[in-house]
Image 1: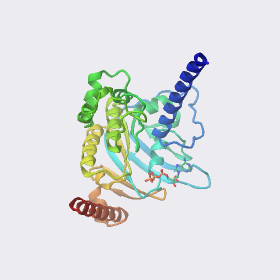
Image 2: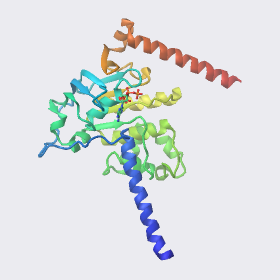
Image 3: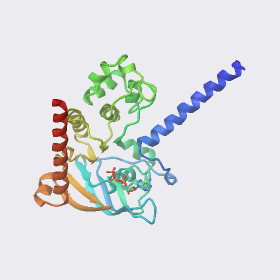
Image 4: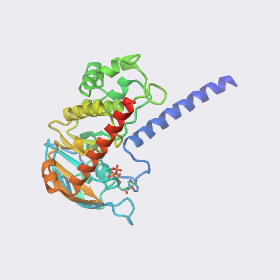
Length: 306
Ligand code: ATP
């Protein structure tokens, strides 16, 4: 009985590992409901990235035909520039990144990269060109080294460590019991939200994609961690076409253009300075967020004192 039990037990373990990996990938992209299957057109060529310009042209989209989510979105991210998308919860910000990855197809309009409609190229080449730092990074039940190398399997140990240093996570890794060989994930060392996000940034640095999507965490980080992550993100997005889905407005101040989304439409656009001067939707969001931050800091001070 024991002889039979052991291989069965082993197979169960393998099954659980595989299931976990599939779940990890799904969670990583925030897809909990399975989208309708998106297929490559027969003989679809690979995407040819030249400069890396991304365009959303009059994009219309609904998950459910009864409920339109994006109602005609038009913007371009010039090669090497950063565009930030802000707006209230549910406005459709993360939906834009799911469409760029082609987890769903647009219902109207089109998305292009260097002039190529993303529906006409192979999905493998599309996804290889885009690096994603998601809101909640899911770590694999493996070592920190494995989790970073996931960005590019052929990377050497030295390259993995260099990417970690650029992502400001190297010192932390060295302080863990087995350094880069420390097991993380469900059964290993638990990392904080900010640490996981830096692992994701290190992965992306290794992958070195021409186009980046940063989906910022909604949860409040302490201001020290936020600054560290901000610096790491600035490094990785330098000279790359970058779309930042932003929840904290402090991270969009330096963007080349800010798109303000509300109920599936662009209601304002411009630089941080222009939008503040306008005194409209964005300025209102900015002031409310500043007040909330001030209130949080006063509370934290009061708690620290006593
Ligand atoms: P947040 O700031 O809270 O992350 P968001 O602006 O990124 O919000 P999205 O995640 O793009 O918002 O969602 C836009 C709308 O689409 C929401 O009303 C959401 O309920 C709906 N939605 C998102 N994913 C799905 C899905 N898989 N099926 C159906 N509706 C969805």
